Amino acid sequence: MVGAMKIKRELIPIQKIISVACRDFMAFRGLHNFEFQDGINTIVGGSASGKTSLITVMIQCLSTERSRHWTKVWNPYISEKPSLLEMRFIADDKMHYIRRVMENDNTTDLHLYIGEGKNRLFYRDGEVIEYLGKLKPVFVVDHLEAQRSDFFYWTRGKTAQINPMFTKSKHLIERLNSHLPLINNSISNIEIEGRDVYCRYKDGSKVHLAALSLGNTKLIFVLGKLFNILTRIDEDDLSKVILIDEIEMGFDRSTLKKMNEVFNKLAEDYDCQFMITSRFRNGRRNPIRLNRTRVPRYYNLDLNNSQKRKYIFKNPPFTTKTISSWGSSKWKP
Image: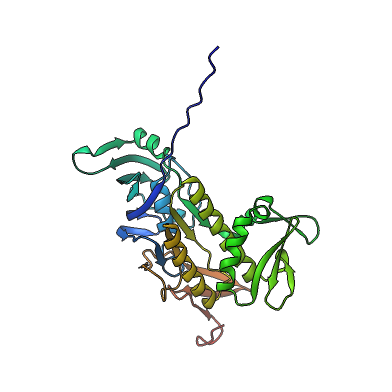
């Protein structure tokens, strides 16, 4: 009797993203082109400038889904015009060019070119979906607060049960301890006691991870998540593109500056490409500046205690001017 042989399909890691173009997609109106460098790329912009939209363009270009429901804040403003998404990237040491046309939630056309010159391959529609399924996905770090389970999860009372994958990873803790003091001057190292994680300060005191301040807790989350990704990339030959969105909330500028230096070093050490959204440009490597590309309709008339008020929101910075029908127009809250 001959046993069945299980065939393992070899997946292809994505090495880097070269450029992205989009037209009439989410926050972007008209045609926009973006070029990326090796290592760190910082997508800089204020609130509603299109930072998350640009990250979404990259994710959507590589998606194997033909249709998806958008839950982003730009969904109510989607135009009736078709959206065009294009991206050039390197995988298997070959140039890839993908072109996706979307109408609202649905992909209507897909083209993929692989290689250059006479040996260039061309795929379309279903063939593209099949090929995209062979690519190892890029890493996305988005809204880190929702990913605490990577490190610990809450139990009864005020204690925290540490995720076993975190406590058993000696290599991860060592990497964390080698970089944590570079960002935070008060922390010495992280220690494991059973299934609990403690933070040791330089004055000798020790605090449970769950009892740290929000800023220090999130700093450990960011570094822990990052080193977890880098370890997997190194060990399993995964895609070397990491998209990081919305991690700055809760950090001061001094901490962000030091974190940026650590990101630069890690990009060189691990030969990875980072796409990081940021509100700040100073000190950032390869900054890509986004201006507000669409102005949402933030004009409302409201009744408050039977008094008619007019709220005007400017872009950006966001300032509010309140005009009361019975008060002075010079008064501002």
